[in-house]
Image (cartoon, rainbow, N blue to C red; front, side, top):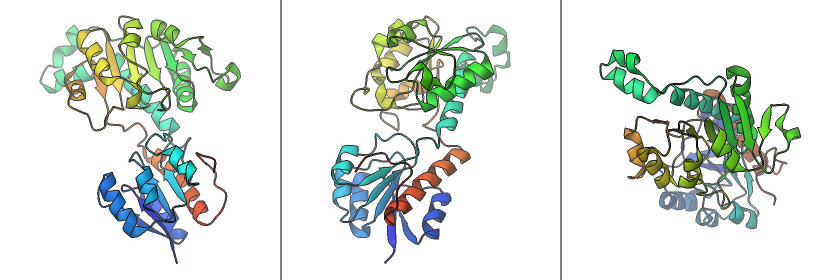
Length: 322
């Protein structure tokens, strides 16, 4: 009897080919949502589940009688009930390095677009105002500016490296779990508190995992600390931010500008949709990790480890200990 994998959404053919080559049968969910997943999982009874950002809940695990593993095509694990998976001895695997460069490049793009007020210029130009260029104010060069990093992990360091070496920026960071020796020689000046980052950087970018200790920890208090023309960046998770306070800060001028790839919830709720009409905000729909290279890297890593789980072999990128 073949092993079986259930995709919570359509995934790359790269993953499917890996499963097919290893005699693992693939079923793709016919839609989105826990109710549908529960129905299809109960009928299909997979050995492993592979997801992107879709939730994998305790109920979904319980309905599978022989679930051995869950694979995340990416790095963030906040969509999976990790504690429950571990308690049930279900191995979770992920691709922590597969999309790091893609996200770091996306952060550079967002920063540059915000610095040049791309959203405002683009709207004006498309509406026939070629001469917006003649009265354009508050656009800046990033060379010599200070990049502030809240969290100095893999993506953060890649982002900083591109900004320091490629754009001539300075970088400061706060991360109580990272030492100077772990910066891989990057000239990031580590600070003793997050407040120093918020108060002194020209661009503040957060790079934190979403967990109870970090959820909703950024809001009006932090935005009020920022310099008058500083810009806030988020390519991590929307749940790190008190989004209603972000909207208010942008509307009232407390925060000069922002560049965002992630939100809470996704898609945007009614309050967050106000961001769509703001000229001082650059927005992308959670696409930082979706390059061809990133998808291939993440799918290859995740699918290969799920095959390893099916056949009882050691995994390369475990996300939990069972």
